[in-house]
Length: 94
Image (cartoon, rainbow, N blue to C red; front, side, top):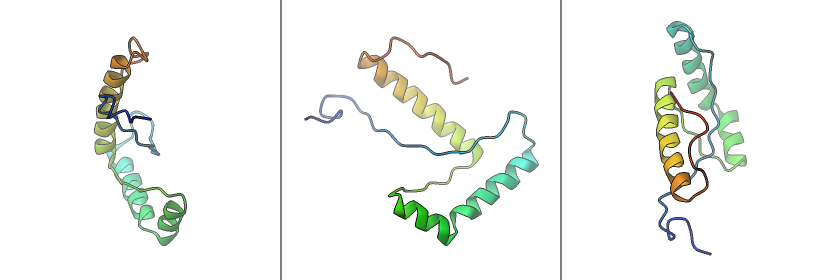
C-alpha cells in the first residue's frame, strides 16, 4: 500500500497532547503554569511514562503552541481539501 507521500500528499500527523487555559489568563499565571509544566516534563516519572507509552515529548510555551496549532491547521485543511475529504473547514482558527 503506498504512503500518502508516495501518492503526492505531503502529510504527516502528530498526536498532540496539550493543556490550554481560559481566554484572558493573566501573563503572570500563564508564566507560572508554563514553568511548572516544563519542570514536570523533566521529572523521571514523566520521562518513564512517556517512554512506556512510546511517546516523544516536546515542550512548547503557550505562544509557540498556538503558532504550532495554527500552522498544523492550515496544512491539514489544505491536504484534506486536496484529497477531497472536506469541501471547507467547519471552523476558523482565528
